[in-house]
Length: 132
Length: 196
Image (cartoon, rainbow over all chains, first blue to last red; front, side, top):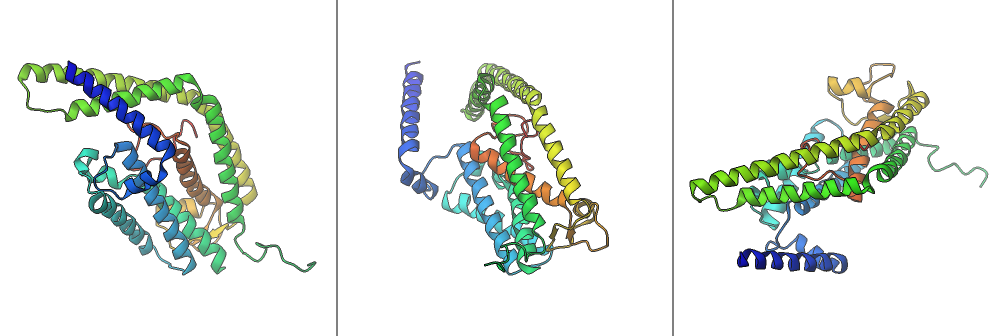
């Protein structure tokens, strides 16, 4: 009983500390993105992976529309590249145990569809405007 | 100066920018309506909070030390079932709550789509850098003449804009449904239809 109370108190203090850090210390947030020892909440990791996918989708769309790269194969390649980057990030940089977050499927699907539509949108727009 | 050509006059597919612009503005308007009718209300905040708490509690209970006595396991399973049913109930209440308010947003989207349809019916607004598969072509070549499958109609571009802009806007503003709620974070996380 006493142990669970003190654990709860510690948790509350940690949360307050985290909130304080979230409000004031962005360098520590950036450091956390590359720190394999940092502890991750399921929501936090999901959000980071989501935004990584969006950035990759936007960059790929802008790049491939500019060159231009044409053909459906580039959609498959984009999916492979963006999934590879996300996998490399959580497995090799963060070194998280995927079982704690619902498995590889749960992590790899974060932001997948939104990034695909964003990639297609950027690719189509740049291709249409720059080459016609 | 008199002969200066406007920036986008030389582009063949400037209509695509109009579609994107209207889609973006619509997304902002829908979010504003959702915020007024849903997100700022105390009912939504309390439901979301209870779902978050229940999800976390459920995760903790499921990952606790499994090597316990049979009687403890039975009582633990009962507790897990109770928390799960409470989570399902809160998720259902949240969905119902959003559904009632989502009708207004749905009406706005319907009107905007009708407007865009009347403006761009039969027009090629963009060029696809790939040949779409049959099922996609039905949307991408909707209302267009000719056989060139790389011609893109307003409907397909609007669909891409809607999904990408609204999903990311929802995420950015922190209005995404909690991951513990039914259907959240799935393979195809469409922007929450009851709020958009």
